[in-house]
Length: 159
Image 1: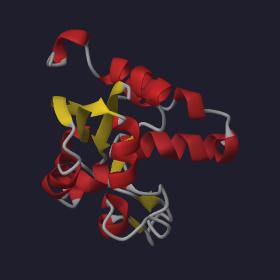
Image 2: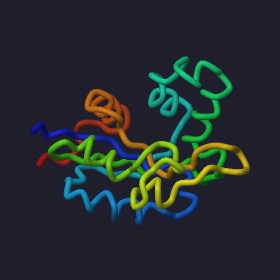
Image 3: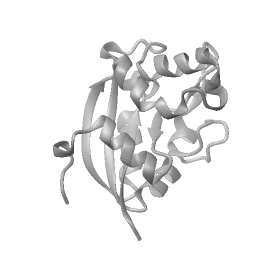
Image 4: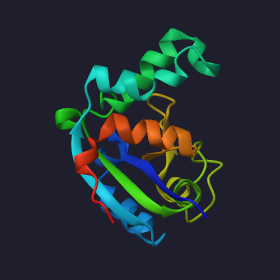
């Protein structure tokens, strides 16, 4: 099996609701190794770079929806001081698949019980957005790209 690295973000809704510790506890239950972690202030540039592949795709063909996605990750909807998220990299065999299993489906209502999104996610009645607490890379290629956006190589601990 392949040793992979994957990105996980505790998103602004998770920060606002103080769910970071609970989410990390579940992530650590995978027995994968956390090789990087930091608190990041999400700028417009970082947000757009992170979600660049979604621009003009699916529901994000609607520019308003894409802009809402950008504002969400920046913390604008949750009034998170300093636009903070926690960015982490986990490493191990099949890291992307293992983390995705713990995180659960994007839609909190579809996420399995016991997953991070199944336990803590919700759909905001105020904005109608998924508040799914975390972002996790969807596949190995995406993970490599995202890790490179959020971390410099020297920030990753070599195992």
